[in-house]
Each structure stands twice: as structure tokens, then as C-alpha cells.
Length: 217
Image 1 (cartoon, rainbow, N blue to C red):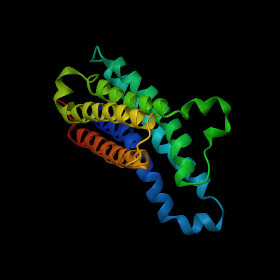
Image 2 (cartoon, rainbow, N blue to C red):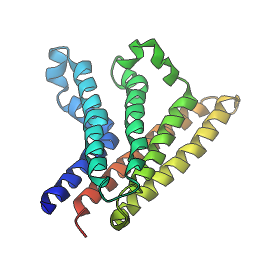
Image 3 (spheres, helix red, strand yellow):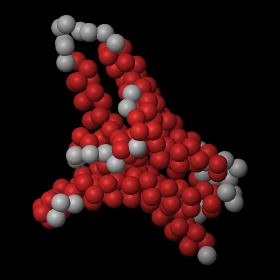
């Protein structure tokens, strides 16, 4: 029974980590299957299914399972709730902002209410919120397990600090015109998305490491 519980916790952490790998998984699988998908005209639909499956559905299920079992032996189990909100927000951000760039359209953009996701400050706030929510999730585990969460906790905090600093620089740059570097904002944003993609991949890998090492003390 104890072994079954441990394996369930390991599985739930793996499912949660999918939200950090979602865009990587979506792009890799869509690229590998690009020829058959293009031939049947299902590239965009398949990409949306993968995005919502790996960015939202599986991580949300994993997090709910984890919180249900953590509730029994951690007074901080509810610290995982912000991550659940963050999973929804980051998925909507990816759909609204990244999918039209990588593919041809956004599903959520067809609903006028989601136009609120367009302003750049909102995008930064969502990504910062996900990083801070990830840190809170790391602290939600039972006390004897918090040692295992040190690496994702540090990466989450570092990611939040990085995005806060970058967002300030980007917003200042956007409000001014630099005659010496007229395309500076473009390059700043390009560096940001590249750095964020790598950071979030490392964060996901750190959770996989936690899942592998997660055992009964």
C-alpha cells in the first residue's frame, strides 16, 4: 500500500512537469508527424490537442492527485492551488501568444474576452505568477520531503527574478525610442523567449528528478 502511494506521487509529479515541457512536446511531435498531418489538413488541430493535453489537462490532474494525497500529512497542501491557477493561465497565454506564431491561429483568441491576454505586462505577470506558484508548490510538500524540492524551488525563484528584471527592461525600452538600436526591443524579446524556454525546460527536468528520487522516508 505504501509502495503504491509512493508510485502514485511519483506519477503525479511527472504529470505536473508536463506543463513545463508542453511547448517542446507539442513542437517536437508536430514536427515529426508534419507530413501526414499536412496531407490531411490537421496540423493546427493536432497541435492544439497536444498543447491542451500536456500544458493543462495532464498537469492539472497530476496536481489534484498530489494535493489530495499531500493533504493527509502536510498543513501546506493548499499552497499547490496557485500552481493550478498558473497552469490554466500559462496554457491560455501559450494558445493566445505562441500558437499563432508557431502555427496559423489561436483557439482562445476567437473569444473576445481573452483579448486581455494581449498586453505585454499581462504576459509577464502570468509567467512571473507561474514561477512563484511553482516555488509555493515546492513548499507545499510534507516537511520531510522539502529537501527533495530544493532544486526546483531555487530554479523557480531564479526564473521569477529573471522575468521581473527583464520585464522592467523591456517595458522601459518599449516606452522609449533608441535611435542607435531601433530594433533593440525585438532582440530583447527574442532573447527573453529563448531564455524563458530554456529556464522552463530546466525547471521541468528538475521536477522529473524529484519524481525519480521521491520515496518514503
